[in-house]
Image (cartoon, rainbow, N blue to C red; front, side, top):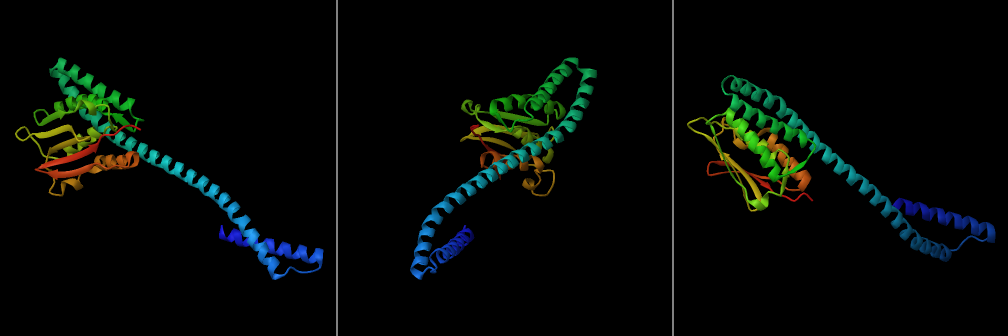
Length: 262
């Protein structure tokens, strides 16, 4: 803007000097030059301010839209990668369980197959959704818990306590499942010492906690893998908020903000 203003003043002064010299045969004096520049500045500044203001706002709006599109695409890519990671392992583990059930317990096998179908129906239906209503996620979680209880029979304990008014709030899709899977992957548990997972609402938060009994001697919070990292990124990008992760009283606790969709 400054360079354009200087260039315009130079052109105005040169043009005035040439016209004045050729038409009157007298070059402009200092007072006329000063007056010309004062008038030119009063004209140039508003015109250039409006022009560059519109130019800046146009570019800023375009850059903002591109950044939002990039954020959404990044979220979709990360979620898709996680879903693709979940599908093959989860599929083959549960098919093996189903195979063993069919040989011995036909009724149990039928129930397992129904829950298995519900889980995949949910994943396919919501594969393009960035957020999901809590009541829908909990319906899916019921089927998911049924399946993993069959796999880790008598080794897990789940406790749910959800306030009714929280059911219409939203969280990132598959967030609870990822945190339950993290607890299963990174803790030691057995029939004698069960893995206890609590899911409850408190102060507009969805809290997922489990007893702290890490497999590795490394710090537990550094071993949570892609699931927790993905959830944190999605909260920041979608809602400009971040879940809180902490260890208290031998419990690993993740607090997810419950949000409106808007």
